[in-house]
Image (tube, rainbow, N blue to C red):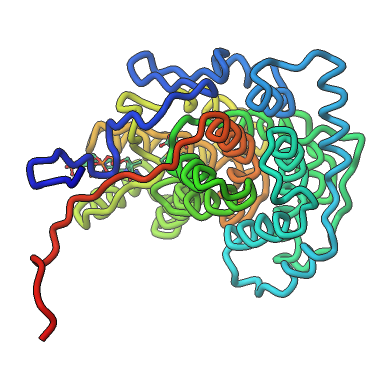
Length: 381
Ligand SMILES: CC(=O)SCCNC(=O)CCNC(=O)[C@H](O)C(C)(C)COP(=O)(O)OP(=O)(O)OC[C@H]1O[C@@H](n2cnc3c(N)ncnc32)[C@H](O)[C@@H]1OP(=O)(O)O
Ligand SMILES: O=C([O-])CC(=O)C(=O)O
């Protein structure tokens, strides 16, 4: 079929249902999100990120024995091979951490013994190896930017506790580990978002899983997608910088927003392609933010968060998405702003790879059509 000017174009594929999935259900009418049928809020309240990763990949929550085996595989894979560290060391510290993650994912693929094997069994192994390695990549990169020595992984800690330990060199408080675990669970999966769809497009050509993940990292980097969690913090920094001593945060935020909207800027951390009445994950993450604001005694950040949310509601009637509360949570934990989206990567590896496996189970090359609107056929001079 050759599209004509009468063909309906679905710009940005908005509203297009491209395939079925059993992995998650995003329901904008009920403002809900299910992973394999379970409400994400319940998973965040009662499960570890490791349990959720297992659920996304295998379709069911693990039994105690299955979880023990799964956790052992994740803990065994925590170290970083020398080649990955050497490659990271070759990159200047001006390199964006998302480029470091993308490079690391590519090297992990180039050196994986089962790289070319696209069986489900091999892809599960590659998935857990990536899940185990990415925290080490992020922690290694964060520390080298601060001229600090690498901290080796601890096999006696959970995924989240070890992630924080490797990054900051000391055990985090239980409430901080809990908030981090919640963020990992909420970021894990969200149906056909741009980076997951990228992974599925790449998988549909029968390329290998690491290629799909590497491409997905590139798609996540943009500020209209995962990069928004960093951008939220840049917004807060700008408002704080412009705030005169003893100035009113609400007024300063309102002014910043009016200027930004007058300049036709998109306000990062707000709006969503699917949810038009608020993101299902925000209330859970906001509760974690409140706990972190209290834990670190930073009511000023809580105030700024509330001021921008209220100003956006007044000016545009647009609600926050998950990146809005997550950015300040990671800031309070001590991560550099540029490390926020790599944290999203570490979590979303689970969703991406679950989708790669699902795509391969009933594959069809993803190749839409385009309507040509360039110059008519003509002769060479
Ligand atoms: C984890 C995630 O990836 S969640 C998304 C993270 N991304 C962001 O936070 C970036 C900021 N948000 C946005 O740019 C958008 O809301 C998107 C890209 C997420 C969704 O966009 P779309 O569904 O394509 O909606 P679209 O951009 O067409 O917006 C519809 C209207 O709302 C406005 N709008 C939407 N979001 C915003 C925003 N954040 N700031 C200002 N205006 C906005 C648009 O300007 C547009 O207005 P118009 O009709 O007057 O032109
Ligand atoms: O679904 C989307 O378009 C973006 C998003 O919230 C996510 O990937 O978590």
